[in-house]
Image (cartoon, rainbow, N blue to C red; front, top):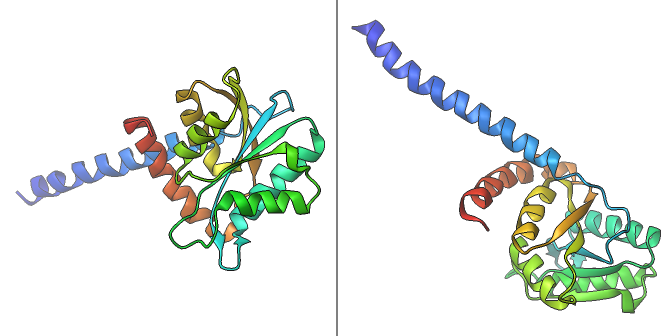
Length: 195
């Protein structure tokens, strides 16, 4: 009887562990898939996704890395226009997009190359509201965001009818484990719910 009880406990435990491991491997592949195709300047517009702004209107490290990646891309491809996208969170003093625009201006990007989208509060809204600011015929864009965030952004962009290529910004080491774990859950939600 004890042996039977042990199996009753062990079998569900093995199922849960192997299922969890399988989901970990699948989401790991998704995160890797987000890094391709790399942007080459062929899209006229690049959307830079926002992230937290700290007190004093200072970009968080995640946002700073995204802005550094956007700046490098803008310098390499001077014909590309940048859509900076991000609204104001409840704990932020200013819209993320305004901080992003100011950073780019201070670093030599011409104002006429910057389009500001400052209403969004989610990745889906970043893309949807940015789309509303672009010419209707635009069907392909570059997405600039943190490396772990790219796959989900690409999925959401495809739901809006966009083809995409990407510029991957580094993820700060201090938050990498946490944000990657959270992103795995967000990816599963996106595949199930669609947003």
